Length: 227
Image (tube, rainbow, N blue to C red; front, side, top):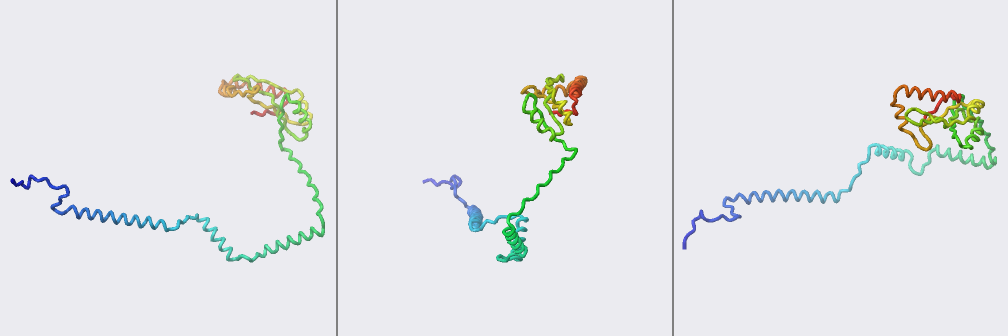
C-alpha cells in the first residue's frame, strides 16, 4: 500500500488547524444574542407602557385654571352673584303675576334715510311689470338703471333699446337715470367685442365714447352703469 504524501491531501472544509475560526464565531454569536435580547426586552416593555397623549400648552394651562376655580368654589356652593340673579328672577316673575301682562312698547319711529344714501333699482325693458313696480316704489329709490345700451362688436357699435317713458318719469320724481352698458346681445355675451375695442386704435375708442355720451345726453341721464 502506497503512502499518500501530506501535501497531496485536500483540506477539509471545516478544518481549522490554527483554531482562529471558533473564537470569531463565538464573538459574533454573543453579540447577536445580546442584540436580540435587548430588542426583545424593548419590545415587551412597549407592550406594557400606557400611551401618553401630548397635550398642548394652552390646554394644560386652561386645565390648571379650571382646577384653581374648583378649589376657590367647590361643588355644592353657589356663588353670591348666582343667588342674587335667582332672587331677581323670582321677583320679576312675581311682579308679572301681580301686574298681569305688560303693555306693549310703543313702536319706534323709523330713522330718516340720509340725504346721500343711494338706492338703485334695475329696470327690465319689455317687462310690463317693471314699469308698474317702478311707479309703485318710485318714492323709495334714488337711481334707476334700465337695460338700454349694448356693445355689439369690436368696432364699438351700439344697440339701443330705450324706453321713452323713463326720462320724463325719472325727471318728475327726482330720480337719477343711469342706463346700463353691457356686452349682452340677446342671450349671448360678446367678450370678443370688448377685447377688440379695448385693444383697438384710439380713434375707434374715441368714437365709441362719443356714441355713449350722445345716448346719455339724449336720455338726460346722470351717468352710466357698466356691466
